[in-house]
Length: 198
Image (cartoon, rainbow, N blue to C red):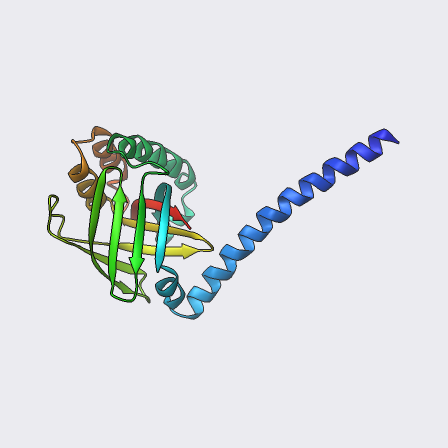
């Protein structure tokens, strides 16, 4: 009898944890579906507000990468190398955030010790975001990338070379980023950047 009771309790606890995962998964699926139906307009409106950095963002696009069995292994390697590079310039959870103000198309970013600001534009259909950095200590000019909102998560990703330029301008030259460029050179549709949550 005790075995049956213990098994039932374990199954109920596992079902409760799985239900939470299912709720998160359904929220992300629903967000993605609505975003597709509205040609990216949901992401455009959802971008508004403050996003807190949670880790590196990696996005593979194109049929070749999506069907490549090594893509999952490659992604974990890339995330690991990005985490090291980011931590060297002070980008860590709890120290970095991005705020988009849709009303006046401005943004502010806190990346480690650096505070950056400027204006932005967003092409909803293509999920492309252009960040026009204000001139200051770091003159980054315009950086174009992609923004994807899924549930309460945001991925802000850029072409590999753009991200390397951005991160190296925040600190000294980071050798792990040059290793990443070599690793990803053969892939055209790889975007790297940052993952955020509300």
